[in-house]
Structure formats: C-alpha cells, structure tokens
Length: 130
Ligand code: THU
Image 1 (cartoon, rainbow, N blue to C red):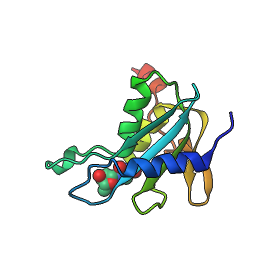
Image 2: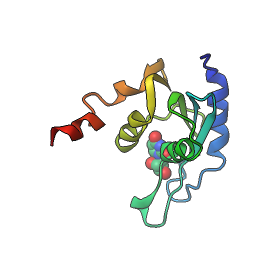
Image 3: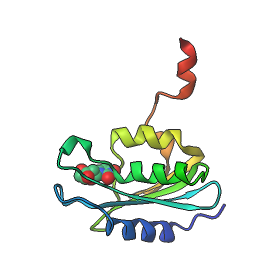
Image 4: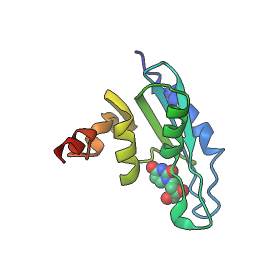
C-alpha cells in the first residue's frame, strides 16, 4: 500500500482547525491511512475539568473503530504550528492496539514503527497469564 505522507500531514494539519483547546491553546490534529484504504482523523478536545481532555489520537482511534476501518497503517500527528507531535504515553498504548504489523508514524527523523514507541507494551496476550 502506497503511503502519501504529504496527504496525511495535510489532513492532520486541517484537523488542528477543528481542535477544541481553549485551555492549553495547543491544537493537535491526527490523520491515518488504514488497512481498508480509508483515512481516519482526530483532534484534541479539552474540558474545563482538565484531566478529562481527549488527545487527537483518541479521536482518531474512535473514528477508526466507528467506521470499521481496520488497523492503522500510517499515522501523522501535527500541532497547530505544523510541527510533529509525539503521542503521549496513554495514546501510545491505545495506538499500538489498533495498529497493523509494521504500522508507521511520521516523526522528525522520518517514518518510524509505532510499536517502537512503546517497548515491552502490555498486549492482549498478557491476559492469558491469569
Ligand atoms: N495532545 C494531543 O492531542 N496529542 C498528543 O500527542 C499530545 C498532546 C493534546 C492534549 C492537550 O489537549 C494538548 O495537546 C496539550 O497537552
């Protein structure tokens, strides 16, 4: 599957305009190509109860699952200023579970494996340990 990184970055940047970030003023947008060939998107949605804010990656995964669009194949996350945005720890766990084998994220040094963002991650096979 061909990955159009420029398109994903553009889609992610466009999503920053939808961001609801009145508290941090830090707008984030995310866009991913999925295994079904779809493009899914998300933006951060903050809350007056600060700890309840949702990251852009959470919105993206909700879009992915709600559309039955398979797994993430390639992901771009950008700030309102157009810079790369590294996913927080919580989002790394969420992203890994919904990423295809070999899924990539656009980082400053180039595309990197999403799974490498979270070495030794807690995965579903661990639940078999009892
Ligand atoms: N944020 C994201 O949406 N994604 C990230 O990868 C990092 C941080 C949001 C959360 C909060 O709304 C704002 O950025 C500032 O932390």
